[in-house]
Image (cartoon, rainbow, N blue to C red; front, side, top):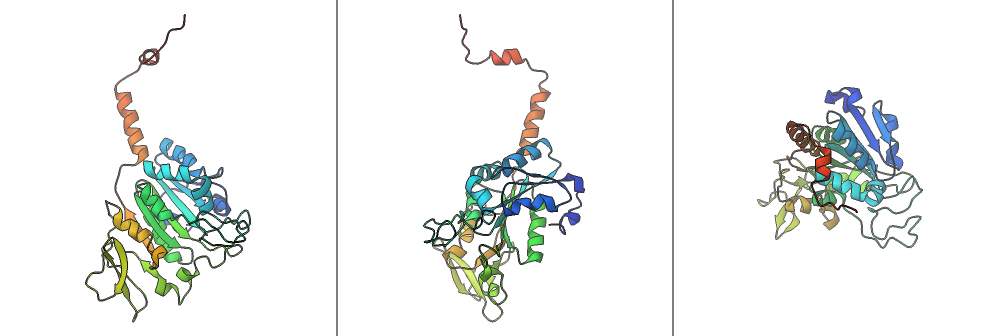
Length: 301
C-alpha cells in the first residue's frame, strides 16, 4: 500500500484509512495519512459518513474476516449495496488471530481451532459470493505473497467510482500457518491459480500442463487448454451468474481465481446524495413548521 499510494497522484492529506478491530485493524497506524481505529465491525459505517460528507477524499476500509464478516457483516453488506465510494480491503486468514486462534466465518468445515477442538461444524462464508449478492460494483481478489499482483489490484480498486471490494488471502504464521499455501507456494500455485484478465480465455497451469475452464450446463468445468469451448473472462457481467460461478470455483475443486472478478459502472451513493441535496436547495428556503404539520398529526386537548 505504501508503494501504491504515491503513484495515485492524490495528496497525502486526502487519504483516510478506517479500521475496525483485529490484527488488520492496526493498519492506519502504519500509514502517514489520516485514519481512524474504530469499533468492532463498524468501520464501513464510519467510513460512509466520512465519504458522504467529504466526497473528495480517498477513503479506505481495512478489515479482517472476523471483523467484516461476523459482527460487521450487516455494515459491510449495506455499504456495498449502496455503492459508497469506499475501497474495502478484506484480509482473510480464516482465523481470529488477535484473540488467539478461534475459528472465523471463513474457516473451513472441520477446522480444529481453540474454539473448535473437535472440528468446526460450520460451513464457511465465501466473501466474493457475498459481495456479488450485495451488488458490489467492483470485486477482486489477490494474495499477500504476490506483491506485484496485489499492487495492481490496489491501484484498480483506487480508481473505481463506487464501492471496491478486494479480498487479500492472508497467512497467519501464529494461529493458522499455511492457510492458503496451495495458492502461494512455488511449485503449487502454478497448478492451482487462475489469473483473470478481461477479454482473455480462462486458462491456468504451468507450461506443458495448461488447462482451461468452460461453462456448461450452469457449471464450470476443467477442460484441455486446446478446447474450443474455453470461456473468455468478462468483467462487466451484468447478470452476475458467470461471476458467481467463478467466485466458487476453488470451492468446487477448480483453481483459485485471482484478479478483477467483476467491474460495473453505477453512480456512487455520495454523488446521488449530493445531487439530491442540490435539487432540494434549488427549490429555495423551506418552512420547517409547515413541514411538521403537513402529515398525519393529532391535536391534544
